[in-house]
Length: 274
Image (cartoon, rainbow, N blue to C red; front, side, top):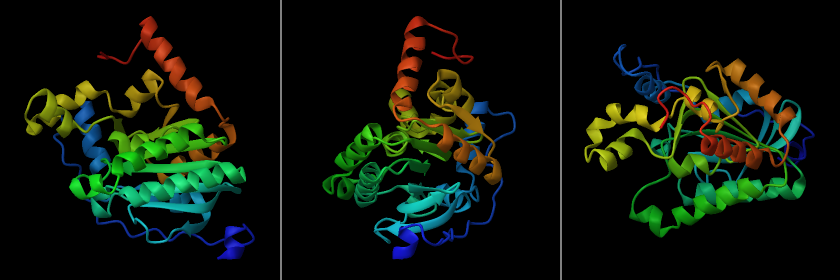
């Protein structure tokens, strides 16, 4: 373990097996936004830990077993030592709990102290819900993780590989380079939650999804994400390695400032933007 942690030998990550593929649960004539939601949620789609296993040549778990839905490690990506954080949406409904976020936060802070870049693999509909999670401090854990990412004094890269839902995803996406797979989605709230608020009927999620501008094309068009990448594992890994070489500390703030400025100027937005 010590030799692997120091980067003296590789310890590859063995990703959990994926469930059998199921067809996308969506009508072929559905709105592209709802098709993207169905694609991101498709059973059998590779999740964050799957992509992490493909992207890393070594993975030394920190706090092993703390939260299988959100794992943190000292890892090697493209020959560089990093702190990696990966989600697994096939564990616990893909909803990490407070302990998982606290561990991720400590890992990000460790990266800052050691001068290691941070790479996150995001795939969650959102963090744990319910009174138990609230009593255990889920809101504070997410906020502190988000703050650690935003303040990290090292280059950071995030890639959304499925569903990037709510604050549970945003906390790990405040990165200098934010990538999103073409078939992934990213939003401050899921379609069902938005429908429950806007229409008072969660079953109206399909109708509300286009209003959220949650597709990869939307995110890149608005300047929230830097680039969309192919859903293929190889292409995603190549994009992550390239982004790791390009990322500069502080790009995260410059990107969001530029997106905000463009929005205030009324610059061209994706078709149908509000």
